Image 1 (cartoon, rainbow, N blue to C red):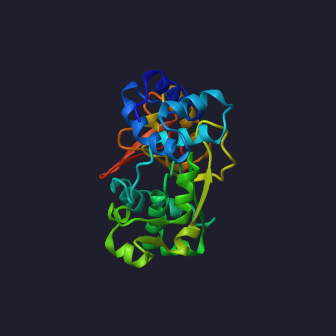
Image 2: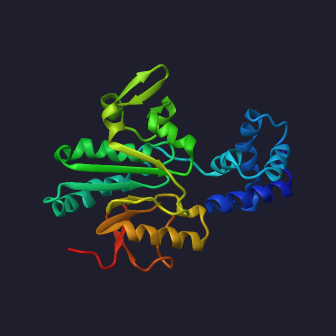
Length: 276
């Protein structure tokens, strides 16, 4: 289903307006690959017919589906590993000491896709911090895509998905087979609260966040959108909280309220004027 240049420009403008995601001109092939199945399932013979329909009607669910299809959903369990090792070894122990009187911890995973990242956090907490069973721990996870969130809430993954980053012992301990797939335990599913919203829209009310994962998200936005997102993170992050970004992302020249903290394995960010 080839897409002509003019129709691709319409898709680029729609995606940017609805999500602030910037599609570069050389991503035409990506739009064709991702939108062709949607065109078929919604009854359009070609991608150009799909775009002609989008142009002709008021914005509706189909427009949103196009935007969601163009959002990158790449994820895996314990992706890149080192940020999770830093969380376990360097970030959580002192943070838990600071929370020893309140016994409360709030973690947020933005752009969670199909849920592997928040479930990785839940697995890490269950495996290495058993004392948190008596705490009030909230793992919040959000995404733009209703389709991805439905998959995340279901907590069912293919053999290929569990093979990517999930240690075999954790698979056996915390998942069970359902047909050809693997279902995460009800206990771990219950640890994560999923919600849908656009990072560039008004954010819902958040509790004060101790650990924020917004990894491999900022790379898809323009500079102004990155600044807006970091400013919103700054408002919900506790003074001694930590922000994790992707390996190719930084707050440098975007928000000087953050400073990078480098550990042996990886780095993260915290507010410059953090509390004790």
